[in-house]
Length: 308
Image 1 (tube, rainbow, N blue to C red):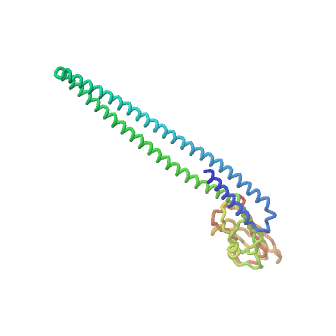
Image 2: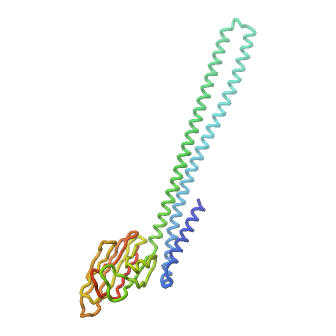
Image 3: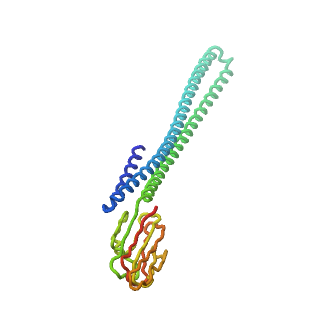
């Protein structure tokens, strides 16, 4: 159990180090403190999980102790029954020998006079044999019942133990994944190029920052950010336009979560505008900025980062 637990912890640390090492070299110096803090949080959570594993181990050892006590009690009962059986057999043999000797003596001396007594002795002997036979049958029945009960308890314990181990492994893996997901940073900033944008999804192919985003090529071509780590995200978009009040919509999948008129016409000067919001995203949710109509858009930027 200790070896398995150690392997799980080492694998968790290896996975965390592999995840943290994927941060781009451009931002590695600025994020070094965050990476150490990230590893410290993982170690803290793994220590708590190790404490829970110790509690599970103590519970399982307690169950094994209970089974060993039951086994010892059963062995003691069987041994005492065997000793009692041997004592009864010894007493029976001695009694039988005494009866036979007494019978022979009485038969030799007074066969006719004590005929009735001999018959009574024979009947008593037969009765004792019957009693002994019944006791032996009862002992065998009790022994089989004890063995059946013991086997049943053993099967129940084995099934319970296997279920406990399976549930623990499932819960441990889920908690480990949740732990890594909760502390894994996700940051993305991209900007548009050119000065004219068509209606539809606004594109941001000029990537300024990317941490924890694996599919940048799809984002560059479609302008859609696909959530891979569930949680709450902060989304902000800035634009500059020559158009009169261009309208944008912040979309989650195919639903407009927020819309806003960005700027007014400032005598053919580029005028800025911005929109921001916090949004809960689940796995495979898409976030994108919808431009309602054709506009002159210059140096628009979209920033998305995970806040928990």
